[in-house]
Image (cartoon, rainbow, N blue to C red; front, side, top):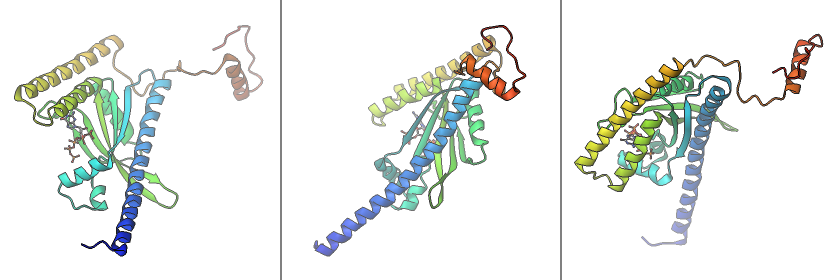
Length: 256
Ligand code: 0O2
């Protein structure tokens, strides 16, 4: 093909258009990620500050890179189009690491019962681990993102797992990466065995926790709220403001 000033211009314009469309699309995934992450952070902070037990150990997020989005579209044999990219549901991903197995389901429920969160798909690799031993609860959820002129519904993949499941999956991913997918049979067998060890550890630690602390009560709001860094003076003024001037302090220095 001969390169003329016209074809050159078309090429440059196409690049500009693709860049703009792709940027807009990826930005919507970033916003969806922000919405879901905020919801999970709020749950974590509520559990941490108001409840007697916090099931969330860690929250991490990732946005797939443009290269890996394009790779996934090709791997799935989809047409090279923005509509095909929209069919990839794990462009935005959140990972929630919980203390114990039962916590993964409880945090999943606390997130997915919110009225603006729609569950599109659930893969329960905890109840049904993968053949290599991989365990995690995966959910594709959809959340509305309100832009200045329109609303977009964005899918976000949320993975819920325990610390032990995360430990195993992170190292397994590294080992597979090192072997570039061609993992010797004895390594696969050892990985599967170590997944079973991690699962046993999860069970034992959860049992231990229940033995020491009793069953976890997620609904219970602890009255002795932690982290309330409000001084006694301010609390006294607040109490008098709320209860009225009839509330007289007794002869003690510290009331709260
Ligand atoms: P990354 O780096 O986390 O982005 P689908 O997405 O439905 O087309 P798939 O792969 O069957 O295809 O989805 P699935 O089963 O829900 O798994 C997707 C993600 O789960 C992976 O994302 C991993 O994060 C994690 N995962 C699934 N299986 C394994 C496993 O055997 N070992 C480890 N370590 N992680 C796993 P990505 O995109 O592969 O990677």
